[in-house]
Length: 74
Image 1 (cartoon, rainbow, N blue to C red):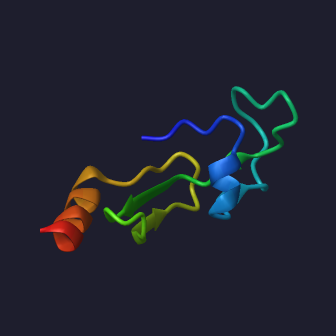
Image 2 (image 1 turned 45 degrees about the vertical axis):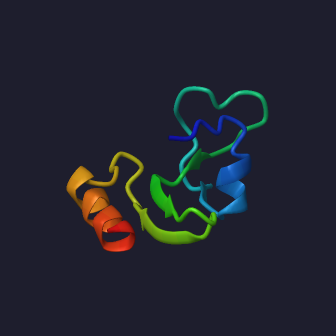
């Protein structure tokens, strides 16, 4: 889990949603929300899997994430 209030990591991965501009915590110069994303990294820090959503209300299904973990790590 990552809390990225300033969207620094979000910007590093190009996951800033500039089309949607409402929600809590958008003061302090933040003008967008992150694209809902689940990212899996291996022990070397390499990104091995990503699930993105165009719908800001949709998150990765836990079974989809579990399958990705099983596929990449077991």
